[in-house]
Image (cartoon, rainbow, N blue to C red):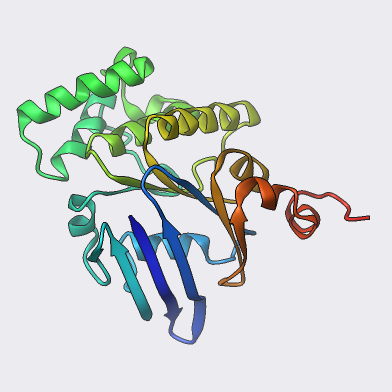
Length: 238
C-alpha cells in the first residue's frame, strides 16, 4: 500500500533523514517512533507532499507519488493528520468536517452522506456540530481532525504526533479511538514521541534516530527490546 525506497531529505546542508526504507500493508498499523528531532515529522511531511525528497521514491497503492503536490496525493487516498491539529478555529465543527470532503472534490450530496457516517462514528461531533471548533478542548479537537480526515475516504492515514499536548487520560482515549479505526480496517502510519503507547497498539514499528532507521520489527517485540527500554521507556537494562 505504501512503500518508501531509500528516501532522503536535506535542507541546504542539514540532513533531516537518509535512506529510509519502509513498507506498509493494507489494514496494518505501523508506528515510527523516536526522540524529538529524530526526523519523524520531516518524514511524514515528505510522504504527504509538503517537502519534495532529495532522493528516493514513494509509492502509494503501486503509483509513484514522489514529488507530487499535497492536494494531488490527498485525492489519491492519502489522509494526513498534521501535528498541532490545525483546525479552522472560527468555523463550526460541521464546517470543519465539510472541508475534508470539499478538499477532494466530493459533491454536496456525497459530503452530506459522509457527515452522517462521521456523526454516527463520533456522536460528540454531532452534538457539537454548530459549536465553534476553537472552543473545543484539545482532545475534542483531535477527534475533529480525525473525523475531517475520514471525510475524504482515505485508504491510508498518516498521523503526526496526535497525542501532543493532551493529558494522559486524553492520550489513552486517543489511542483507543485509533485502535477502533484500525479494527475497522483503516490503515495507519503513526509518528509519535509516546513510544510506549505506540508500541503497545501498533502491529509493526520503526525506530528513527538522527534521521536513520536503527531498529524495526513487530511492535510487541520492540516493546520488550532492552535497548528500546533503556533509550525511550526509562527502564534499566540491568
